[in-house]
Image 1 (cartoon, rainbow, N blue to C red):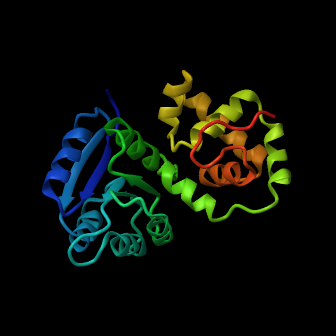
Image 2: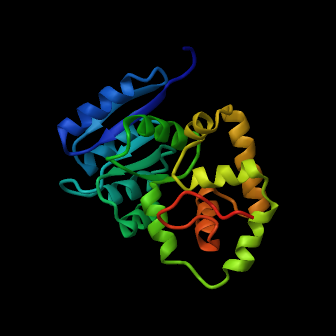
Length: 226
């Protein structure tokens, strides 16, 4: 494979976790771990020194935590995408991470292949939230205007509705392409059309709208028939 590899810095206080993630990512031809840190302060320093494309950031660590480390990385002007990788399925924590500047919030119990795809996705500018987190956030925001919201989904084609359902499962474009047997370029085109038709500006907003409208129900991945 030719071309520049996506450079990743790992920040986690558990050496076994770091070594496992490093082995996983380094086995991918397009990914490369360029540094490791065992606490938030060291992670900030390493990120500003190595200029990675992606920082995989744990939350609870000695000294400053991953949320504060993310704030400092962003305040320093780093262009690295911060993907919070944690075992904590906590929507409040996810909100804090996103507000601090994280590009995504991913759970450590996800399948290994999904982690590699998530790294690629945030490096490409996508925003990712673990599906359980998205569902919890939406459950807090469900209102009474579902009929009007659901009407927006009538403008989508059958394929575009499939795309929305897969987005609600937390899939990246690469995973979507494999799941739907399409090219990534075609998936990207479909996603962009979905965002335009739904009058939203991001994948996360599209998923929130899908849950708010009832097109996708919390705990399920199938949408309503329109």
